Image 1 (cartoon, rainbow, N blue to C red):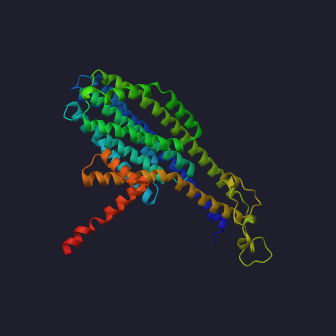
Image 2 (spheres, rainbow, N blue to C red):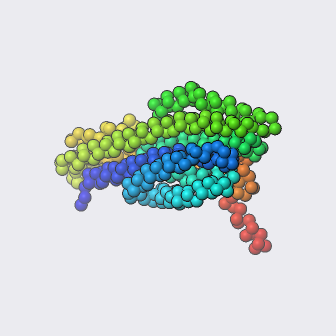
Image 3 (cartoon, rainbow, N blue to C red):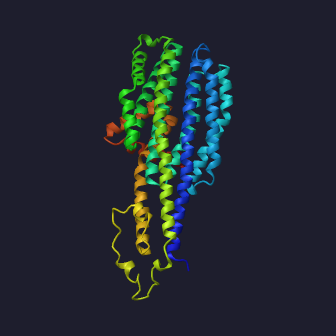
Length: 430
């Protein structure tokens, strides 16, 4: 019969295998960050070309497309290294997100041909690139959602919100580029622009609440001393206060440059988070390897006594043992003394798993709240033909009127939607 030590070793091996796979998923997330950054710049240049009728941005677009292709090659390399995927629903969702993104990448040449021929409007171009980038961000989301280690999960959730906020900033760059290049800011575009500003700030607030101390220092320096952000703010005011919504076409290049510098700075913060993420994955994996080696080194005499063997070590210890200390940490079990009994290790491993689940749940709360809000917003857009900004404003105003959190209102919208299909059926039966 296999001993409890055998299964303790098996538990460590499972955790180590999960960490190895999570490390590969994190490497994929890092590659996705680079691809998203390159796609965002291609989108902005494509909008400049389309809005100016080819007068601006054309000479920069071809080399930027090569940058996108190079970043996509990096993503494919990481996909090849990914290997076996997590089991269960999280693994299926991650694989679906990857498959969807690869379909978008395969369709990218057709989109580029439409831009080259001038057959797209700037809003249509923005939406097309946003769909592909959303697929990339879905991969990041599912990687964060499948993370089974609290610190890594927290960092992945922070990175997702930073990337989401940066994507909204990228959409703002595209929106403003189109407005300046065309020489006008129509009311619908103005409303969308304001919505993008508000939405990205919410993402950055969540990111800052989850970021590590070193990343937060860089982030605060970026927020406090970013001269490019000052230029962006100034041009925002110019665009939104222009008489008759008429804009100077010459402002397109300046706006694009200021926003591009800002996005490059945000990507610098992304890169630091990605580096910390990779170092953390390596540290956690090394700790698991040490813990596993220490368990495997335990002598046979460390096994608990057979059940019912009186007078031998073990006996009633299982029933009399006190609860494991709250201050238990992985490092405490990382190098157990050879004389430590297996029962205490089992208790500590159990406490470790419970603590992990609690911390992971806490880290993912913001992630799932965002998913719920997005689903509710999409439902309102589909059912009532609302724009994204109008759907968001409706959720927010309803929450204010009812003195509730937006999450509660979003959950109520989704719950009500589940009942809607039953109403026509009941009417038909009458």
